Image (cartoon, rainbow, N blue to C red; front, side):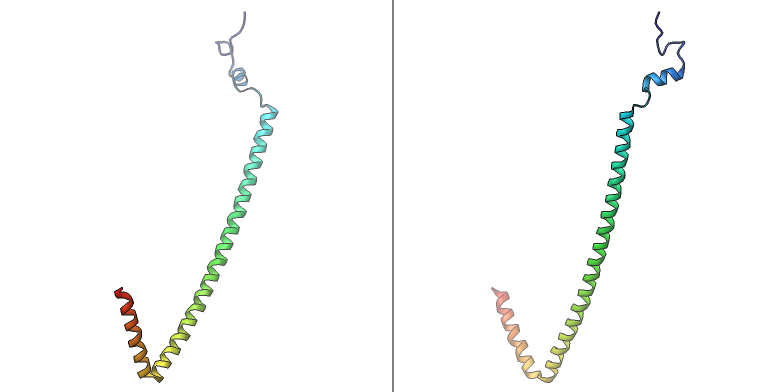
Length: 109
């Protein structure tokens, strides 16, 4: 007469061992390899994130520096224009009038 594993006489430990079986060495190696792969991918992703953040920070700093240089150049040029207008008011008015006429004719078309 054979014994049914989950019959009335079976104990819980036997049932557990028969359902899941002892850990197979191949399964353990595969699981360990998967863990190492995931850990390696996480480390690589973390390094990539650090590099992206560093690059973004450097780019932002370059943009700020360029913005400051542009603002200085605009200020210098506005100062030159203001000086020219103060020293040559009639000529400046004539230039402004001609520029207005040209712009007006271009916008009508």
